[in-house]
Length: 127
Image (tube, rainbow, N blue to C red; front, side):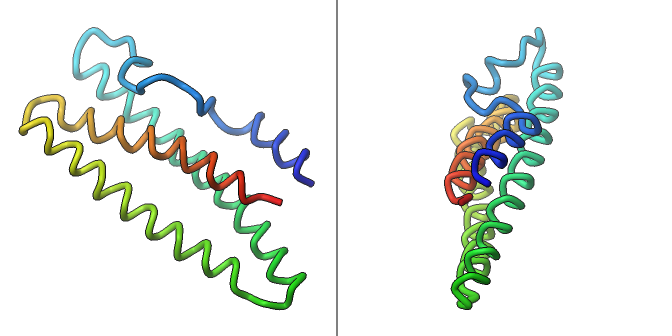
């Protein structure tokens, strides 16, 4: 099952191991870079949703096998906490730009980086 899941991931998810998201966007202006990172965040959020679906299925399978419905609810709680933390942390990163024009790009790039890491974390829980 794990091999099949990893194969599906390789076919359906964007490449997670990349450089700084802003460096991956080759736009000449902040508008172009902003659009690029926004599109990238959409793809990363989709990858998170996909990986979360795999992790939830694995958690539900474990709960069913053990007849202890604790893993799936714990994953839901963890994901909600992670999402809130990502938003708060990236908002903090944005404040370090002092209100400058790169603030929005920095916040989005932060969410991409953390989101890529979260995909890896979720997939590590798939059994």
